[in-house]
Length: 461
Image (cartoon, rainbow, N blue to C red; front, side, top):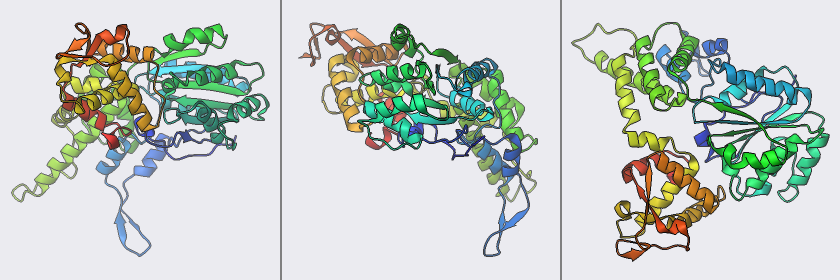
């Protein structure tokens, strides 16, 4: 079975600002080391010798532990998600492993293990097929999506001929192939016909294409599933719920055990981290960040004690306690408003960015009085054009985004009195939506902080 290891993929947020395509040959999607490899990688040995004959100390156990708790480090094994793994394994066996087509839609909040679970199961498969991963966000034109898939398959093409060439390849490819579309919800809008066409190709007789779409949006199926049902190409649906306390604790412990059985982080501290994260978002990436920050706090405290001449009896290695985790949670979690903003998807953050731009360019205090939805949509389209990463959604889809943000408690949408606020008429096209105004329910400084943590928006903020 041909399989080629590739470099670790960036996080999904980082992928927004990077190249859209990740190439994978065979069935390997990334470098996911087993537990034994992690131990050999981070094992603490005495010394090594470099090219000039000088001894170079190996990373300490504490440094190795921080490395294995990094977001970029693949998990030694998939903990939990038994039902989800069974569903994905069944889809692979029924489709691409048999040389047949098929489609699946995987949804779930960020940090719930969607991509990691897929990577692990594809790697475990003993069948011979090709898999490619394509990030859809930076692809601004429909032809670019088809071309990106073909180029990931090492087939050179042009955007204007990519669709016809992909159609031919799905019927005549010697080896079945699996296409994974990441951030597939970004294709809705002016490019949504691409999404329908790809699912149709995966449902055709004798096709060699199996398709998996990954998205953070939980309502995507309600927006495009009826049309897929009408075309008889409805995908299998799989939702990843947020991690619970037990799963987060076991995942963190398995990463620590991959380095050493010595308890660098107290079990009670791990459980505190898991309880707090599970209660807010269930995002495993946040739990990893909390543990790493807690280790940095413990390391700084340990170093300070070592420098204290009056306290020479310092333990050899620091230990992370409940106190360190509590401080890390306080520093990283911030207010409830920050947590709400961090949970927004990329399109919703674009709406907030457009709001910030309109307020900054006008002397009126619209933060308290509200901003006409029509004017906000016009600025949103300008922002999408400036980023040149994705096409703007339609007006009705924009209103859906605003409605979701209102349900999340980030904004409030209120009626304008006679189309006016602050003594001036709201700008925009006529329509029912123009008789409404949007007002932020969170502080603008929190909004800017959340936007600055998004790689695609930070350079222009």
